[in-house]
Length: 226
Image (cartoon, rainbow, N blue to C red; front, side, top):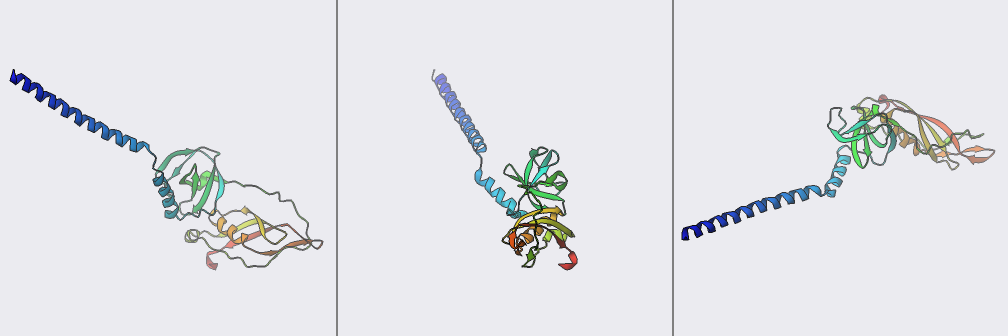
């Protein structure tokens, strides 16, 4: 009888130990699952900051573009870079930033996600287009300041050069009010627009009064002149 009772007690202890072990394993698994389900907002913020710093993205210069077909974003400018899971549908408007001429890729932001797409898959779109009706003038605007043009290092290294032609609206106070690119060189457009926006003019006049005047202005990028 004592042997039977001893066996029962021994088996009960084993059962209790097994239950505790299994219970501990389940708790650990649940903890891992719960942690995995919580979004790490701090990590997401760090990833965005790291992307901007790593690829030297100029967040101050942004343009809108439309996708020409369904396309994946890539994690780097390289054509063989890993794709992100998200597909951007054809006709979607995205924000474009730096152009990488060597890889022919644009850095873009879509749905708060950074990535790269081939230049062949997007087309710039105009925003808030201003009617360019001819404004009569009898005295044209006169440039009062020099053009401070900076050659983008990536474009210069890639050997990109040529003429960017823009249409600008000069206000009746001599400020450059609107800039529209007519003849584009994607890797040079932003630098040309930045330079033109800083030019000061003496406004055009019509019958002695200052008026807004549209003008065309070419900006030449030549490797031999920089």
